[in-house]
Image (cartoon, rainbow, N blue to C red; front, side):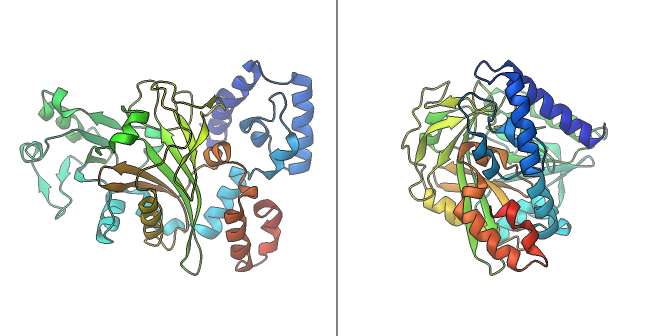
Amino acid sequence: MHPFFFRFRKFYNEHVLYMVKDKQRKKLPLILFEILLFMIHKKDTPQNYIKFGGYKKGSDTKNLTTYLTGTRFDRFRSKHLNDKQYLYQLENKWEFNKLLRTSGLKTTEVICKIEKGKIILPSDDKETTISALISRIDQDFVIKPISDSAHGTGVEIVCYSQTTDLNTLISKYIDNSYTTPLLLEQKINQHKDISEIYPIAVNTVRIDTFLRLDGSVDILTAILRTGKNERKVDNWAGHLGGVAVKVDLETGCLDKVGFDYFLNRYNKHPNTNFIFDSYQIPFFNEVKEIVKRAARCFPKIRSIGWDVAISEEGPVVIEGNSDYSLQMPQTIIGPYLLNKVFTGAMKNELLSIKKGEKYEKHFVG
């Protein structure tokens, strides 16, 4: 299927159908009229109108013009901010992990990688056997693709105490018919206070950073993502996604209200009844410091969304995303064109780009 049709089908199934069924929506003729006005004014597709709730009763469509269009920013980011030649440093989790460890940054504990039927250890890149590997495993671990595990795709969490035959489990991935390179890493022992919010998944802080040309790092947004409904991952998007809550960049405290992918509001976690209001993320200053240091490790990839877990010892960088979606930060925190840190960074950036002024109306507001 062509990528355009795949994206259209996904958008239709996840947003358009949900909008039509929403009991809090405006009347359909009014929605269609507003969509037409939005497209004429914005000169863009109606995605932002639908994604950010323009169809809901009482919504002010004027505010929708302050939401940055994701596809437009994706093109700009790909052309001017993130060099494609270096994206493998983030996308390949084996290389990503080694680079951060070499820089002295705390990241996940890699057990091995499995590629082309071989088990490779991280310490010396040498091959080992299944029996030698099993002797190194004594706790819960995660199996995931080295690349392309967006939204938790292909991620398996293995409970060590409930697994009776590790040999059979690992052997199926070594079979030559299994072609996807895999990473095995220890499951993070989450901070007990974060577990109280939702204990089944490792709940992560998503922080978006912008690396300026002078080497300084701007933190644009911070969001706590939590799993829900017995899911073992904290991914936010889609029907199975969890709840995300704004984190105050100065205090590290949660906002009063969180949202899911479909704009439903929560003042407490739907499964644990944990109240979000004013809860302070442990080690939040350290979280900000570690993502700034991590951002400087990738000078050719200047726009990154970081996933950071909180252990009892402090923050652990799980991964960086060069193509992170703007939908979550703009849903949870608000329009990027009203984010003074972002618009300030973009103003400075556009000065260094030939004919950069043509982007101002889109990225500065």
